[in-house]
Length: 438
Length: 152
Image 1 (cartoon, chains in turn purple, cyan):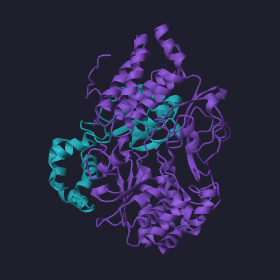
Image 2 (tube, rainbow over the protein chains, first blue to last red; image 1 turned 60 degrees about the vertical axis):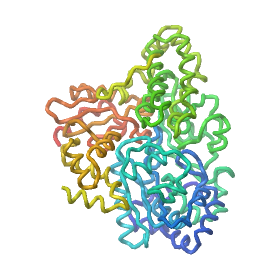
Image 3 (spheres, chains in turn purple, green; image 1 turned 135 degrees about the vertical axis):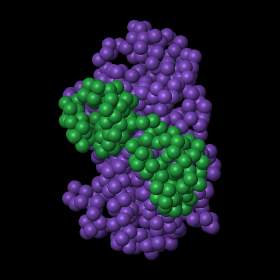
Image 4 (spheres, chains in turn green, blue; image 1 turned 120 degrees about the vertical axis):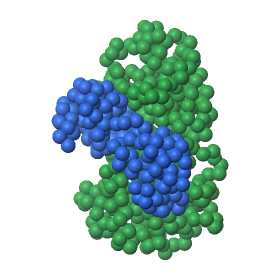
């Protein structure tokens, strides 16, 4: 295994959806090694490796495992979050489609660490082909006796972004509407079926075999000290070569965009990069000389998130970008908390008013205030995800917003790359949205 | 049907967990949408009220509470697809099928929808045709996709 590829190692040369081919390159060899260790020893190894969660929050995986209440008389559950729905993210999908057995090998190791015999993989409902590949891999590995006493269940979601939030995912997995739970209690104490539960992202779990293979010390030498290992970066939007790129953490954002992804399509100018999936504050073209790791990205006021970069060129109107983004979060708000449910709708109405040229200076103030009144005021982060990007587009490209108001319309005059984009919420005539006085 | 649904309930530590797979199964066998009867069936099999099953179904985008076409065309119009021309793909489907997003063709064959991110951002524009992804779709590809669908 080369140091630069852990997740996708071997996928260019082999069909790693097949058990025999995965085993031919050493697949599943880390499981017996893990089983020789006690759960305490294994957790210590994972903590030493400092593998940070790849789903968005970056919480150290070993530490999370250590928080699972292993003394509980209840069953312990390992839940893999394969509900990849963050706009801009398509990495978990590639791992499941190309190397499902590496994910399963990671599941067996992680399950041993928390003394679990029940693994659930919650995959978003839209990923039909990936579900079929993953289920076939589960069947093949189980038939080969590789699972021992461990049950692995692949469970399909049914279309809801919020189910990527861990407690909403648990609700959904229990057969309920996917609405987040208040925390505490946190899932390691009281999760699935009220039992201790560890929830990890696909890429996090699929990296675990590499930790066992290399040993935590050598693993921690890859990437940066605060963010060891490699990450599968999803790059999309206005670049020449969009796609997934597995690179060491700490690689420069400029290198990813201009070298690996081929630079801005059509030789246009870079305008903005949304670095962690659509839910995080955007960066300007002048801010991309930054190492791609959790701490460096955090230090410039945004989030590493799901390592999913949406690259935006000069043709895009930032008000339209905010509007399209907010329509998504309005559509996906689960409705449980008032600031998020009502606030996202209000934001959409203000944004529509500004974009069509009816906005006044007061509306810009109001927009910023509504953002502040959503941020941090709901059970989960969806409300934050709705406003963080909007706040950044508003603050960093402020002239554009003022121009909308002063000119009485979009300064792009119908030429923005997002002109006329039709959001799914626009077709929901069956559930009329109450007009909030603006 | 009821026994099939009950068998789903037995697969999980708690039979309530089977509500999503059960709704999916019933929907597939009912022409792609759920009726009052569907909720009664699922409820009876899993020991839940029909109202509970309807409440769950109404939360998720992939369950349909009104009739849909025999085929579905779902165009992603979230940011990454939108930035590289998803709207032109939507427009092409509109003119090829003669319906707006959210509508079904008069012959009941195809429902056209725009959808939120399908997780194919690097391969924009993504269009799910009967839940199978077509990637890198350009407006010029649309007539061929529709022709294939109509022939299926």
